[in-house]
Image (cartoon, rainbow over all chains, first blue to last red; front, side, top):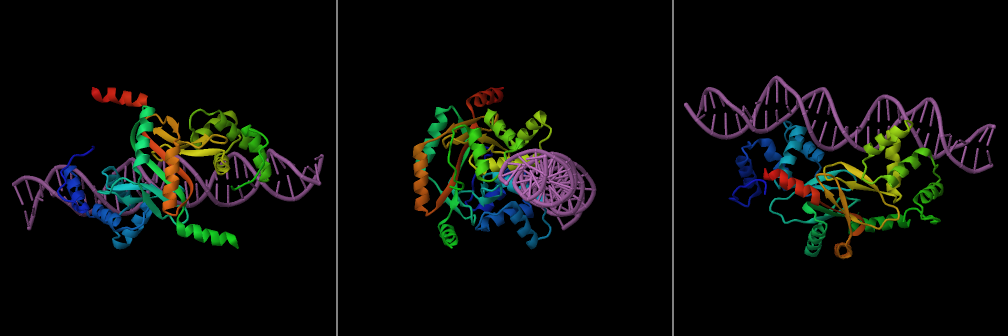
Length: 158
Length: 158
DNA sequence: CTGATATTGAGATGCAGTATCAATATAAGA
DNA sequence: TCTTATATTGATACTGCATCTCAATATCAG
């Protein structure tokens, strides 16, 4: 537990504002813009995506601020970094959502979320066996989603 | 299966030379230097480590060649990229070694290898459930190895 | 040995992310 | 509301890692 603050609402935006207050940070327009972006974004947007899109709305936003805010959101548990498998990565909104892992389509970057208690339990045991103290983990399966495997099959048949 | 070639030996160096021949590539000194480095390296070396160390031995090696060769080794199944969890990464020799996943110490970068058949099986089933065709996966647990958790405890007690 | 050609290294370039710092926005207090 | 201390910002320069370019070189088949 890194920061302690009472949760007065389940509205992510309100909780975020409260977090800022608790940490003595200011509720700037830019911070709220980035949060809103993640809240409304369906796909997993890269920092560059976010910067580009927010620039369109409001020219008065800088690349550095986007990165700074993404880090803030990440370390406060509001956002999670997702690898695309090729070095690039995107962010997803996380607050209030249970832990999950990912299957990532290498063709279209679609992300399927999964969670399996047995895997989590075994992981924990394995760590204990090796006297390892886990902090976090990443379990990513890369491959092709249903749609893309169908396309690929058609493509290679010719 | 991307490239088909008969295995005439279990000596990685011979198999690598055969792979080069099969692909119509030349067995250059540089390619063999990088392979040797990985074969003899105990730790997981970063591309920059490898470049630096090989430069000492033989000034006639370029950064680009190290990267090119690492990619070749990776896509041929001779090497695997391991994330250190902070954006940096290293390579480990892979050929002929069974699949395994990693626990990575965020303090000292020590890597503990693990494999669990149940996890692998569940993964496969989960993919099927989502009609997802897996190509590869990455299961990394980040945390502290035994030694580093002891050090950390001592450090925070004072 | 010779020649066709794959490979190379140096250096330019690309790209994601970070550091710097003067200008600005925020929020608390008067 | 106005004032003021200060956190935050954006532009820009910079870093680190990786890739591209291309003339020079090494490899290997004949």
